[in-house]
Length: 159
Image 1 (cartoon, helix red, strand yellow):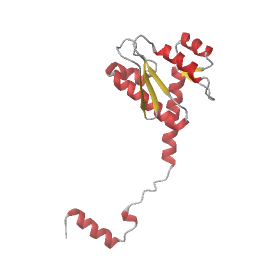
Image 2 (tube, rainbow, N blue to C red; image 1 turned 120 degrees about the vertical axis):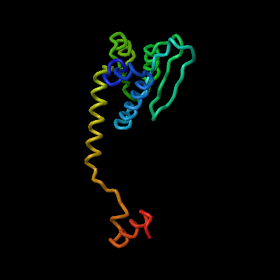
Image 3 (cartoon, rainbow, N blue to C red; image 1 turned 90 degrees about the vertical axis):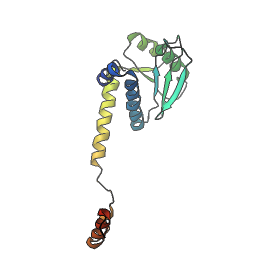
């Protein structure tokens, strides 16, 4: 995703960690809006260490262990999760990986299709927020002019 999505690709060239964090944030927003479970798998097979699993904004984030690629982990997850009563989608534009996950019963979403879906979802949320009337209650709406004048003098330090 990071290499395919324009905003993430540009950020990756400056700060790879921030591009990962932004991907997680965008997918957390998408998850919150769609209700889908989201698991993000990052390739860490060139890094020493064991597999690491974290939760960020209710998104499961997995860093693979040494000598395991993200594709291998995704294939394993597709097998493990296919027994759940939900359809599994894997977001990848890797053609070989698409065929592997098809064989596990999962469906694929190309990286740019997911990008468009996440972007459209974000726009939909923004437009819904704008439709909500401003219902903030301020103290000024509850006070008469004399009370407001007294409070304003106190605010300015006048007696």
